Length: 219
Image 1: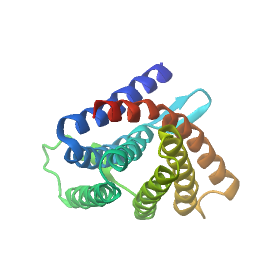
Image 2: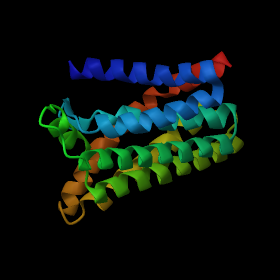
Image 3: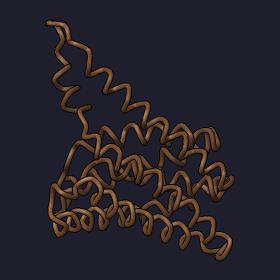
């Protein structure tokens, strides 16, 4: 069932990206990038099994940020896409700071959610720093590569979309896992985790291509 739910999740998330742009233009994508960054930081906590792979639910939401910036690069400008990443980075940092402050409050004797919030919001500073840094770097790289490919291959939308997204996803996965887990796991284990995640994200990246075509066709 996870495979079915996974494809439903991909369709729903990528459809929301297209819908937000259609309804609100680039401002809608700015909103989506902020929402996706926050939701990804929450859903990434849940692990699921797909075939023989273990992955997190945050992958599709993180992948949707690449789709959003590709749409902005395609229909608006490179600078608009960069602005979207700056906004989503600030949103993610604000979310993390506010949730950490929330955990500092001493709960009432009648409180029933504090323990659940501690499980959900307690984070490793090292993991958080690695995640936010690689999110920013990989998306900026994606924007740069996408626009360079757009200049060189203006009629090959599928090429620039897939090549930029897959390449940046691979780089992000390997660097993030190394920065977050070096000294905790051995290098072979780290590379195994990164490779598994990369395979899943390549499939997700390929799935976002039709949605980029739909967004462009909708004008």
